[in-house]
Image (tube, rainbow, N blue to C red; front, side):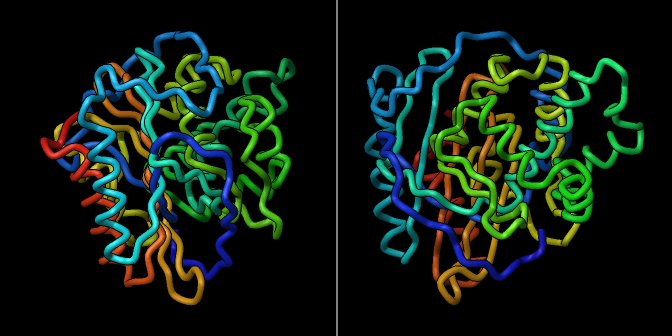
Length: 306
């Protein structure tokens, strides 16, 4: 998505246990070809409990201190970050304690796609079936963050009602439609986005495994550059370079008169074991802000893998 001037909708929300901050566009997968996650069948799992304070260090012995270090290092550069990281096998979640509400920019395209696929599957008379051209457009929206496609789907399929429907089906208590009707100003939090991904994968959000796989496979097959020419490998893709990832990115300028917001979200690991959301807001140029959020991920995972 091209850089849009916007008033960042930030408000302090419920705390997780470890967190970071981010902005608008889409990024995914390996720069050298399809991710090993591409085509992986989604395995049903039990829904994640919604308790906001579920921190046990088993399996994460060093990660809490690394998250704190990454948060401090980003702050020294003038960036405010929010981080949430979930192990879906153990239901352990870590955060940096920041769960602010933010306009999620192109990450809202996840919700647009989810709503389209949900209505298609629930239409007995075929009136909301997506054409082959629609499916190709949806692929472009998720893989390359095509803003024009997002705008077309948003306008034709209900606008703000899309966000209301998805938030209701997934129980996303911090997610709300944009106050100005612009999809990129949809508001959510790190904890809601982590829960969205977990429920997408375990099927409790309402999409079948087949339809959820359409979304996940598009994220795993993302392009390094968006349709607007913006680099999309910041954060999770370049930070966890040794892992297969399926990612939706977001970025937006210019908050508070000149800050960049970058948001990196997605699924990590060949078995879709981990979900991560990291957001960063920094008063700097775009390249510096991208480097900051990527370095934060590298600080948390210095080997490039979980």
